[in-house]
Image 1 (spheres, rainbow, N blue to C red):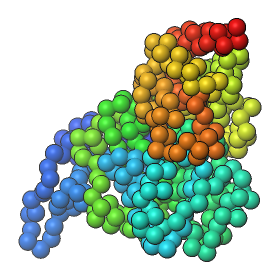
Image 2: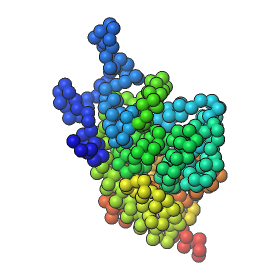
Image 3: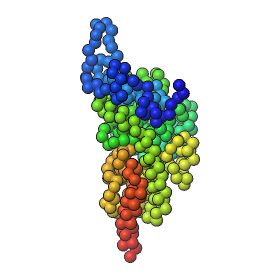
Image 4: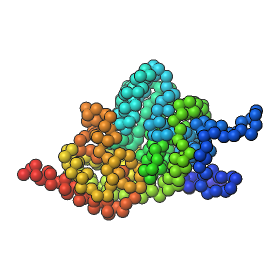
Length: 390
């Protein structure tokens, strides 16, 4: 049989429930498993070490990313933390400068306690990446497109630098999912997801995933998962499997809508900047199109000030104003006080996270309704500019 498309894998994959033929994976709500033999234990003994529902999810995730091993964790940050348990005291990591605030907090507040140092680097500047590598550098950590300014990193080029320096690459693939970007095929060692977002798609669970295709690395991560214990429960594993089934359709429609919204915002006089890799004017557009098959459903845009952003948010009717992204409902976030609140103001501004920056995760509402709502809110924000000028 020829290799099937990812959208088909989302729905079917290779898993089949053998005993009853059930279409949906059963939810094995059991903490422990009876062993039939004194000498030979079965494949499951304790659900921290392995659960049939979680195993079905992990196999699906590995298939989608083109990996051999996957690990379902209790959150995206649990997945990130588990991956960094591969390091030892004295190691150094290079981290993309424009990074999720929770990851920034982990790098700056937690890793130093274990004598692991870090450098934040603009990974779109390959000379800066090479200059940042030290003899003890063990990991280069990528987000592309990044959160929240959608900066694009040349994955192949950074992987080459990492391999020359004998260090690993970790890549957060949350924004594009395996449908639009396949980091393992580009040489990345570990792919990370906040599966809470697009993979689940319904704002109902918290989950994380780690995927690799190196057997030895997979064994090390399996040991860490079992020892560290930040596993995803059976019920949430089931819900995530259900969410993945509709990923292809959801992401396609949300992306089409996001592309139209990005063009609309780019033409609006009040909007200072629009950050979206699908725009030809985006600095990383050409690199993005060379390593990804879609543009995704997340974009950011800058209004002139915090006051403009406040009026804009308060006038919107359709998107929910909340943390998170990747759901069937459009979600508008204010990074300075939400996703990147853990980052000091000076560090935010250095990265372009201004007080007028807003991040929009586009959902499945009708595109005309969303654009009409944005237009209404921008008109209200424009009145502040007119008031100041008068």
